[in-house]
Image (tube, rainbow, N blue to C red):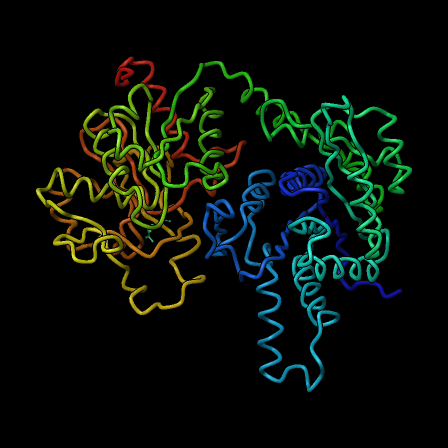
Length: 548
Ligand code: GLN
């Protein structure tokens, strides 16, 4: 057997029976535990679809597009990875079949294969293994590779074959397979059923993968009998049949649940790694605070276009929750479809809430609803946080109603507007291709010291992640500022408006970047902490607009 050059250990996570089992959360939880045992852990997601990355996919189909510091547009599972472990992901953390095939085909066109026939095995599988190895560089101890999709899907086969080969090459003690599966409760029979899991493991075994650990998602507790049965049929030790029951309150309970079952200990033992001590009290305290906050509830309205699917604003909803943890208050989210707000009016949709958030987005559907919502927060003195498109709408609203620029708009939605207060960035004018061409990733921003933003961050410059093509048109800066829009965050060269605020308003902050991507439950993002604090103030002052 060949030994692999890198000393890193590998954990491969697959999913069976159905999708949406929370593989990403489970992988992130395992990474958290191993990281807290003193190991350097890196996570990676392999997605079997043919898009080169998630950047071109609709949030309605695939949920939020997560953005890394280095500008990768990725699957939302990477958000879980970062929130649980605090370790930033990179371009190498999300690999799709589209990227893998694209590289192989490009190399073939360049003559890189010297006349050979290009095949799934070994050329595509080699390319996949290359990406697994990439993460194992620079002193990383453990790489966790999650394979997207469900075992049995046609398109995930090359990925499964690649991890089978990889483990073969590094040897048993250096890599292990974790299979996450569903143990459904059948109400009519009053029983949990293990058969789907047995069959899913059967499929894995037929392609040469023998799972070492089985993690069973279930809504009811499993008995010893279930564990023994699964252990017998799936050929794993009974103690390695781990129960992952639906959590009662929050996803942040998952690591505690797995820790209680000593999953991390078993993993380290199987990988021949020392079981170092672990500290989980801060995490447990955070979960406790989240479940039982001391200061009641604030209600935050989120006015957006992708409201129907909660995954579409995953990081945003998490960041709001984090802001709640930091303020010891529960955050209840009122999801408002911006088109509904257009029909029913801001008053009807927003009254009674303690603050309003308008998130990022693309396309003109529902834009007027967002603008109406912002006008309402401005006029009512309701705390407001605008993100990306939310900032752009705030500027449009202010231009129209406070600067006398009737018909002001974004050139994205109204190319012929007399007042294009939002327009295409210079760097975007010649861009034709769609994928990966926006202003992406982390960029520095200088803050004005007399601002809500600085009060929240307490430092300058800051660095935040971006994903946009349009920006505030500098030709309108003077008139906007003259009328009371404060530009409190700028790119280092002063050319790009990154944050705007309102003078004469309790808390109105909008940013061109996406702060939600950098928020974690242990360290809420400063803007979200300040936003929720402002909402709490509205609640306590009793000044929130009354219920309609
Ligand atoms: N559509 C806007 C732009 O491209 C906003 C993007 C966003 O909200 N992420 O600039």
